[in-house]
Image 1 (cartoon, rainbow, N blue to C red):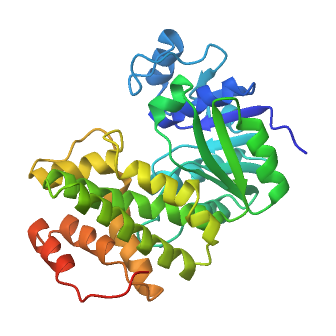
Image 2: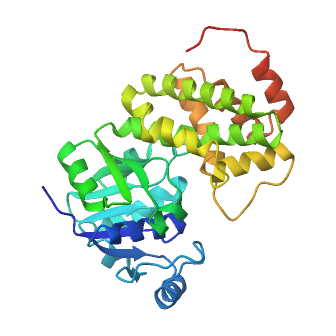
Length: 326
């Protein structure tokens, strides 16, 4: 079983910095790639990333703006926004050796192509081994070494298992899976549903409405997962139900906070990316292609596009025909 001793993290945002700390705690030799040389110098000098304030970068982590150097690792964690993944992978392509695992740490579906993250890797980096990391986690918790469990999926179980052993520690516990698509669907859909849950809180509709929204949102996630071939245990596991519950209840969730601001009639917070904003219309288009009914996700997409007001979207959901549970 490969050891994957040398790990590079491509993307020095808050999540990338947190994962660099996690990999270093697991005993790996870690390189953190930042595209901006000035940011590289500042992080190297201060051992702190302004995007993750008051948290020290583990001393053993090397910070670089040399992409060729970073690409020489045994495995890569690609920690870029979902809609920027293709650009990052294209930049890596000339430097990447054959059979290097490329673990995507973004949650979403690409606009225009409707491709999942690992499909982009397979297309742009055919020499790499696509993998996905997802599950209920916040960058601050992971960076500080608080207990966290996630899912890491690759189509080859031996590789998935080896990556889990390479990245896992007593505080960061990945569970391996070969259900790549199931993990990706859970991560993408929960971002959209978390915006809906935030709107419920922002509109002060009550805890009962929030619980109902989360439960019915999970039903939508299950339907889409089935249509895309996901395994039931994946959708009900860490990267599906677990991630959904965390994202729909914690103010640390960027999508949840985004929804709260919308519900209050405020401008959404800027400076921190809410992936659900970009994923919503693509998720709805995918659901239509699969003939899957996702009324909550559709309502979020309509609100974000301006096709419906929040009050109109709520009325639309509450006046839908009664139906059986499921």
